[in-house]
Length: 511
Image 1 (cartoon, rainbow, N blue to C red):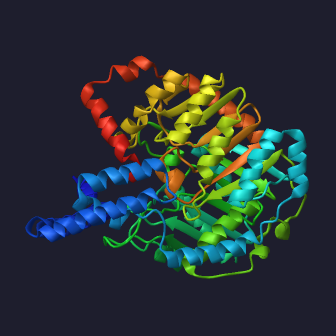
Image 2 (image 1 turned 90 degrees about the horizontal axis):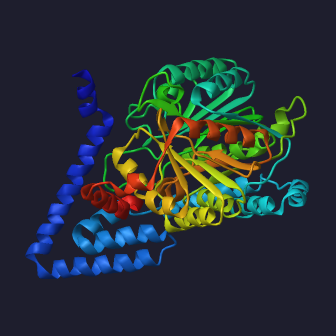
């Protein structure tokens, strides 16, 4: 009873009911006017057509355009209402100008290492071209002098996170999509509070929408009382006039500018399997130590200064400022960020470049497989060309509707020769690519429309780093623990399920 009451009276439920009632009221008012007055009905239909024309000419994904066009023409009243409230794929012009100004400040601090680029070009031109895309179009440079360590699960990474925080002497930056009170965050919070007393600059960013069901409103005030400088990205208010499409989906921990963690692991107990949700929770992470941490630091500072409307001297947070000994050289490392504001789909293009330039294999972990035609074509063409393409998705889903959508993409991929596995022990939340024993990326970017086109994301591209082969070894272990999907599985689904999947796929870019 208590669990049910918490669910019904929780923040997420109350907000959802509030939004639904407001949307329903506006819809009924508009529908009543359009039903009673012919000229209102005509005006709404004309506006719907104009909206479709605007959408078609936008720099957005074609699948997204198709979904909005279908909704607007099917029901102009409802379609216009939903589009005006939730259809914008970016922040307002004013906030975008502010973000652009901060981005220019950060870009000036990210100097390219031309010697490293030339060295990579000599080693592997195909890898160099992938790296050049990230440097030229995402603005994040290539690094040497950066060691990598891959983590196969949250419970492996958590002790190293605590150790790094405990050893901090100057600053600690955390940026996470989800924070939930429990054993994991309690241990981190206690350490952070202790470090504040030692004079360490501690800052934390969390996404308010991501934490809508895990934290109370204005939770940042509680942390601020302990001296932890805290900010919530895009604070959620139950008003239909707000735009909540863009979310900060990154997972970043930076300590003293020398050590950084990223991956798919949020700060909640299921990520370290202290509690069970959807079976065993399989996630992955990455630690980098050295010059490459600077890119993670700038991503955090850019978001921090955007939220808090502040500015600062970025150079005091560079790795070289607090370096006590030379950094290890571990192949080539290139952390990158993805923003929904620049119309450059960095997360997807990094993945596409790996797929399109693979020669022997591409192994992929993703919790969701909701892809556009470009990604579907790339995966199919790689498999048809003889590349061993394998994708692992969850065996136990966290969202059943999303799971059905993911499974709707299985058949065309299987027909092309892609091998698909479902992780039998439970839910797989990892986001990893590895190819040809030399290239890998680990980060926060899911293979779904929100991650690829609407969220702030991050990842680390690597060439011949220690972590590359560690990702491959993990993939091979996971394949052995998973069940391989056959064409028969797809074709024996009943008609009702297939029809539901078709409808869900049509709406996928809007969810």
